[in-house]
Length: 481
Image (tube, rainbow, N blue to C red; front, side, top):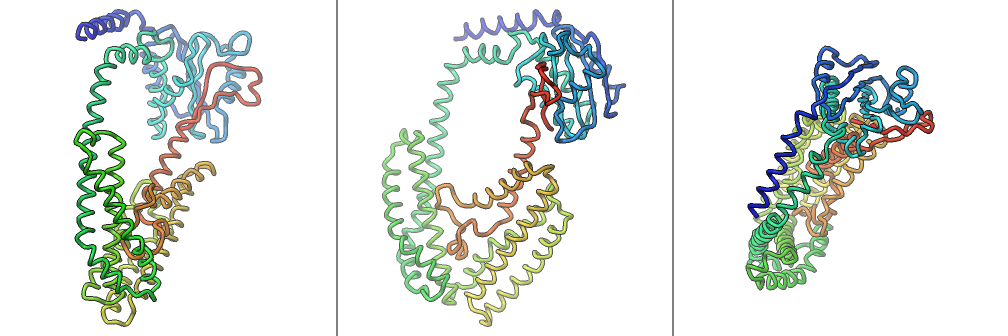
């Protein structure tokens, strides 16, 4: 194995080092048509002239001020036909040989790359060239972004086969495949075993709690008032408690029957995780049963039980300011002000509800109703602010739709994929977990939405030349940034 690695390394070094100097070709010509007026020629020209290509290449840079709906390919072709017919092949169907065009629309936010037939690269490589410039272009660094794109183009256009990514991956992959395959198998098995043991410990901790409190849970359930709409719903959950406990017991037996070696297998990790999830659900539910009994019957532990009902709401209120301070979160908007005002008022309301509950002027059910209404109001305020954020970030309806999907999926995503998890509170048991829109869910949806839009802006290559292009089929494409 060592001999093979050494031989391949020597071959690679010989190919890469022995031909480098002979392949350094500065541009034959650099022509800049900065119709948008955004480039610094004093920096651009020397930087591009110092870039080495593999073959003598003419470089053209074209910028213009367009719109998001424009087809940059069509605009570049229209400009070439009118101002630079030498950019087009004699038959009028392709770009001229030896030519590389880098095009930029800083207003419509498009970037494009176009090549003669003897300089063309695959679509994926054109996207690679464009992507090399996009981080800089997004920050309005038009000159640096243009230089970065041209430099990446020089690395890919007419790239020798032995310098291509495919060759390097294949060469090194052939040598390393066996070693990496064996190492990966061992690592996966070891990591799966670690995960299985972690999940087994999680399940055992929850299962022990449930087993130890089983009789107490039954006593608590026996005194929850069925006349209460909150109590009756919790009791419905309790009616399946023992059946779920039996199922968790069976899972526990199966999980503990696994040998250390068997714990390293993926199907068995799923089994152990199911045991841990089932036990965690029961552990949360028996706590809710205890809190429901203590709060509705005004037992000795009603105060800490009430605090546990308030905890999710308090957590949301505490997270509002951080949520609004994020980039693109529109923290200075009217909907942001409404959230801050609601937060301040809610802190006062919580103190008042707790005092009234302590003195007996309101019932536990009324207190829970008020908490439910407040969280419902917060849900509506978060949805309103989501509309504000979407309107501020999205440039068109397509982007707005992507952001709305991110927000909607985040709220719906509070339901666990396996349908088990729920907020361990009375309201979380009575209402579906997606009933309330929480601040963490908003943050998740916001991040997902912005990411989806950013990806969409960075991808979706356009390869056609529009209605005015006719039969022109030169190699080139553009994308948004």
